[in-house]
Image 1 (cartoon, rainbow, N blue to C red):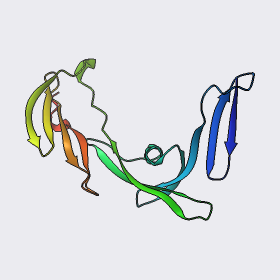
Image 2: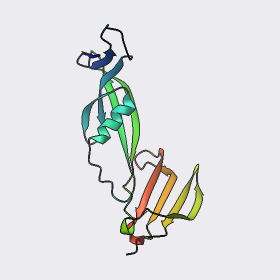
Image 3: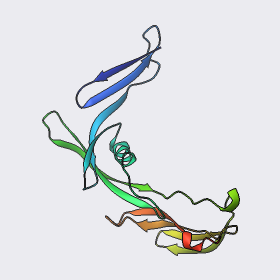
Image 4: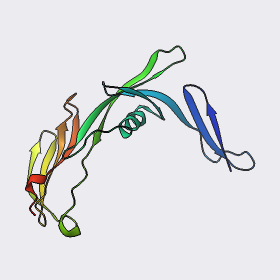
Length: 161
C-alpha cells in the first residue's frame, strides 16, 4: 500500500493505492485557509472552512476555566490572484473541564431546576456527593454576534469539602 501526496501552494490532496496502483480510498483535498478571531490570523490546512476554524481554535490558549467560551472565527481562502474567496464565519465553543468529585467518586447529578429559555432550556444540576452545581443553557448567545450556542458552567463556590 502506498500513500500519494499532491501539493500546490494552496491545495494538497492525498490518496491511498494498493501494490497494483488501484485506488483504495478517494482523494481528500486539503486547502490552505486563513483563519482569525479578530486578534490574530493563522494559516490552517483543512478540508473546509469549519475544519479550518476548529484547527485555529485547537492551536490557541483560550483560558476556559468555569464556563464555556465561544470563539467567532472568520475563515477564507485566497485564489491564484490573491483574492479572498469562500469567506465564512464559524463559532467554535469550548466547554470547561468538569471538576472532579470528592474521594475519586463519579458525580451523582440530580436535577435541581429547569426552565425554558427562548428556543432551549436552562438546566441546573447539583452533585449529591460534593455539591458542585452544573448549569447547561441550550439557548445561550455568543456575546460577539448573538448566535445561539450551548453554554456549560460549573459553580465551584457550591462545592462542599
